[in-house]
Image 1 (cartoon, rainbow, N blue to C red):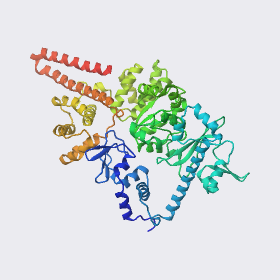
Image 2: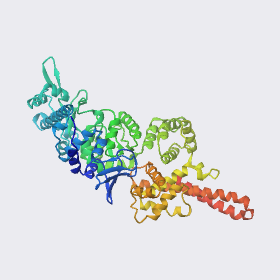
Image 3: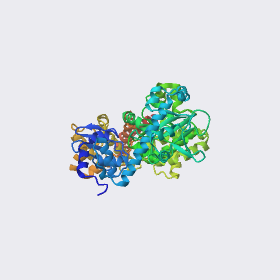
Image 4: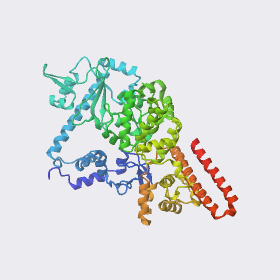
Length: 602
């Protein structure tokens, strides 16, 4: 059968494959006993539910239920067909697949792809050599002026397309045996009917090789050194290159992304190069003017934590907003570093150095909603009632789209402080735009049925979620639940399991799913759903500790409100104890006010 790959070949490929090594080249995983765990690349999550079992050579996600072997994983990650994934894995582990196992159409396509890759590799070598010749002096001077070290220029294999000879690359590649049609398909040359000759697309430009995730050169970007337009010239789309599906610097940044646990997204080629020079080796950039859906999916293969650091000008701010919309749609954890107006990462690093950058990042990085508030305050006069109303209206959409109730509430408190507007007023305006969330404090009032409060149930789930992650969090919250258990039976069920198995539990939630299933399948499903709840922080332990503190205060307030309601009811039932009851009511009132005052101060 044409295109058939014998089963014995597939089995040999799988025998020679180490699924741990393969998967760890795409995403960070860590060992817990006999199994490796990590954040699933196929759906959004904050707590690892993606498992890799070495002795079975399989992966499985307890959250989205995707699983399989090394071939299945590559199919999902690279969006390949089964035969394509088999061949990709065969190439990786050094297994040859016989030619008769490939259809004529597939063979022709593969040969053309290899030919285009070969052309681009030779072109990269040609441009790199030109940078070191006398012709490359203007480009070397430009690199020196921009503070780009020779070592980093070599790491990215920067090159130069001569201005003096518009046929240099075309002639070189033709001497290597490639035809006019080959070179035109590669997008590196154009044909002049007037002269009957090929001329180079790039000339008089600093050349940036663009590589795919495997490090293969698939395109080029060129920056003009003198006056002229366009400032940057990029390869057109070819069978091996689509700018909306690639990111500049990704292959160079893969290791840095795994080590630093986030992707830094900047605007341009030089920003990426300079960032890597200063140790920010997790930096990539879109290719062209806009960040795309496909690029977000590419980033998701590596990490769901993203720091946006576009230029501080108007175009950079617009690019930031577009990128936020795309990344939020795909459940990324987003931070934004708003650079001073007119500045870009290249400028800031050269002027302030790595220490200055780190200090600025620590002080100025913002979550999505605080960033939008920061920008809105620059656009509207928030010293006036009209300006404050415009800001609330501007941010109503993003607030409503925020999935975390706690993040919404925390941000509304921040807006209230910064705009000097009562939180209840902001809630009223947001409800006009469709926000169903009520102000938090009335939820804890004595006139409401706390046991039926959706907010309290959410708070309990978040407390339990954090207790599952850390022995420190468990030790803080568990004593509080001894006297006043959770109102939710499933929360109490998971807590009972933890207390019973605390000595064996390693605070890796997905590791207990199978054990819980044996006891209670409904409880397992509750836990699976719980692990999908998003937290409004990166993986910062200090941030999660603050969050746990907020949840515990909310729980304490609700417990005190229940006691207050009970005491008020007892006034009519036991009039003889009125003095003692009123004293207790007064004490509880003070405790509630103290907790609220502490919450407001924080």
